Length: 311
Image 1 (cartoon, rainbow, N blue to C red):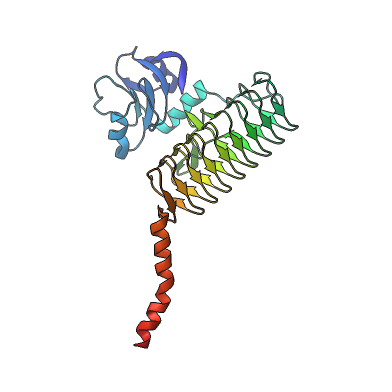
Image 2 (image 1 turned 120 degrees about the vertical axis):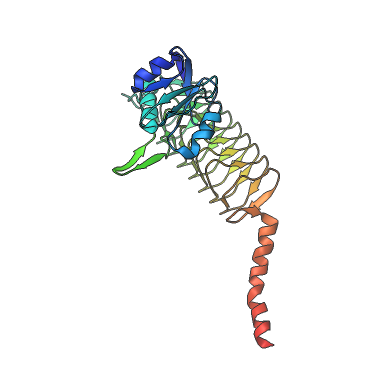
């Protein structure tokens, strides 16, 4: 998430009421999660296990719960609770704005686009030309939809990330201030759910086709010309490269990459990153040829046991 203008370190510290290490006029351009953070942006860290990763990341400003040595060219925001203060910044720079109508006055809808009855379109949504948005679709604030996109009935774009911190009093939600971006020529089936990014974009690439009842988690990036079959569940922060096929009921771990032109067979659990150009099957995931060989061997076990018993 980039801020509308450049802020100073002192201004950010005043918003969250924190101490800081660095020049008071140190420039702050935005905020982001660690896997997508860029120079000039804030990243938060609240566990010593991840201090080094955060301090060595592209982030120029680290929101941290302990005063540590500050790397050269960077700045620190010292906070008792970085998770809480990251939420404060999200509220400040990307506050929730309610809608007063089913289709917001600030939404921009392209020519020849068809909006069926009972569709909700939130504030600052942009929808391109020649789209079909079927009944009971909900498109939350700030989503971007390209040209020639079809979204079937009941799908929801832009719901919050499933991201919580476990506190003694209950689960504390990390607020979502990101967007969903759907590129040109995408088809979304009925009852799909595409969560927005926490601070960045959840993106569906050009020409990708998604079946009914598919879930895409926050900040996931799906490439061009992918095929994703029904009941697939994609976790947050996943990268699916171009021309990947995911068959029905595939599930993924978060933070993994599925390589270009991979084919993942039905009911596979993608537990780790996999290289492109291969077919995969099973849980934990393996190349499908090897996994199917293993299953064939397992079927032979009763016969092997019987032969041993007969000796």
